[in-house]
Length: 118
Ligand SMILES: [Zn+2]
Image (cartoon, rainbow, N blue to C red; front, side, top):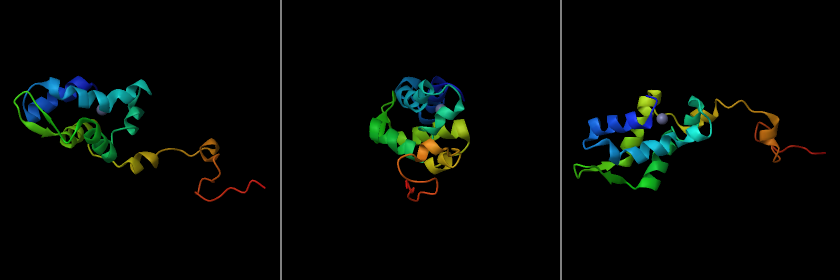
């Protein structure tokens, strides 16, 4: 599923009401497309911690147009499951980052140990 609007339509089908109540959560999840335009944008928020971050930002629940309280984490999980087929951890994303020297410049080597600056 490529567009936040289609995720909102899917939320309305699943949880009731109209898509508008769900749109801000799906927009926030996919706002990382401003950083990188391909699927790698998902590394920023499409993971378990991203579901909790959505909850911290939007509250425990939102009220849909039917007047029902819907848990924000369930909405975020639905979005991620539709995009990825699973909810990865952030660690799953990090394991896919190829370490390069500039990442360790702050004084540790790639194994996390101290760098001897001689
Ligand atoms: Zn997405």
